[in-house]
Length: 70
Image (cartoon, rainbow, N blue to C red; front, side):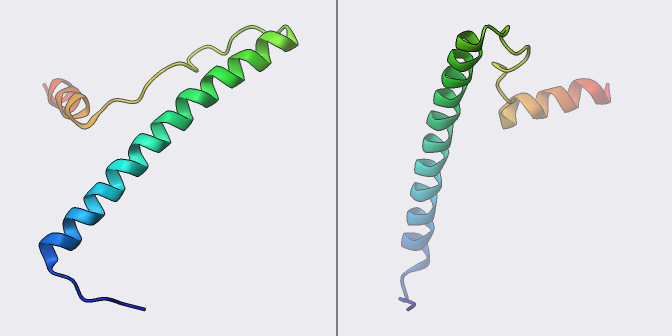
């Protein structure tokens, strides 16, 4: 079923949903890292190298591209 809504209201709803989903994904990623580290510790394995890295945000990525272009 489709409901016709004003464009600005629809856009705002989608942006709110996307923000909520982004926050939920980030929360789950953080929990996963903790759980994987606990599992490796319980198994007596060393911590994964590079596992705690975080991705660059858009501003950092743009700055890096500018630097690499010279």
